[in-house]
Length: 327
Image (tube, rainbow, N blue to C red):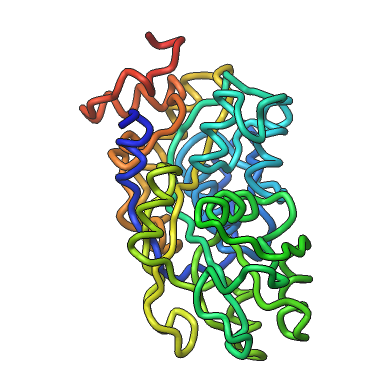
């Protein structure tokens, strides 16, 4: 088993609620940094913003949260030097650092991990009246694989390829997909986010949905091929009347380029973890995530400033996640 496979299998599930907005930063912040986040109105935008608020309140840095299309856009903009910090996920980080997959033509070997926030959960839902009960039933059906260009779309394509499922993919934004499910043009749609995802809750109130659940055999097949994913359970009644659903999760967090000042990243990392309880109290999926979680699930090297903080905690750092500049 590869080192990536060994570590990524330690991913933890997340299935709790997160809603809210970014609070004001304190007057002590003096140096401005920006972070590319996600679409506003999503659970992730709030989670990122809570981390930024805590860091701004406890350091001399004011973190400005910028709305973006998500992790792929952030990776591209980070590579161009347009962002100081970037919301990322385990697969995006691995691909951009190694110059493979979606980033074969735009590698960023200077990408560095600072911390993971929480896992994100894939949702694959269909109209209850569609008669579809398994992933295999999606063959040939009009199904939205998630927002165009998003991580959920890419993961859906990878997972369905392993499962041998071949829907008639209808590519569109999540709000358009939601309308398509309600009016019957689509049998279902998918998204990668923090449950409960508002779009699924809203559609479910208008046209009853069914979340598709993976079998144990399907989970084993997928995670063997895609070790950055791990099994998770969306608990019963996360969406009204739905039973427990077995799905997949992936870690989401914050990255920077190696040239961001080491002391700056050290202060950011320290402030985030020493005030993590505040983040977890507001953004429940972050509860239970620890510095050890970061080390166990790193899919690309740590930033040298973050590495310094984790070493001060006495954590054992695998050689493959120590950045070249710190070796």
